[in-house]
Length: 182
Image (cartoon, rainbow, N blue to C red; front, side):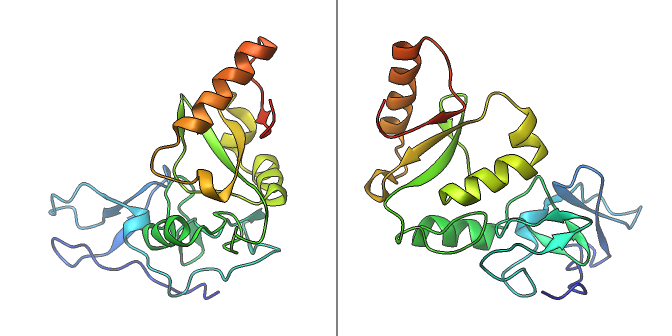
């Protein structure tokens, strides 16, 4: 992975862009430009991004998920690399390591507020690594991980949500992890 991939220029004035503290958007540094920001995941492609596989490269001591946009020595932690996001959905790739999920009998997806979270599936080991390393997944109790089969993947994840609700009714609690068999 190259650590010198620069931000592209501002789409309005061609001035420099900068990733700010929120790590979701990049902003134009030209004070006369009215450009408010663009999602950091939209400004990177696949060139210069970390390769697939484990272990993940570290930036500032944290492993970088395959789907996270990296520009220079910064990670846009709260954004998704749009090119990789589409590739993960289209080719059923793990959002953490980037490898194919087809080789495993099941994968895992994050569910929050009765919706499957963006980013795609994860291998079980990658899900465990992500839960251990990602502050949002580690500290936000609204994330539940549900096990899914390759044939479950769709734009309609209603079967996964139904399984989560069935688990909650059967066990009278919201779990951290929902296996296929409830």
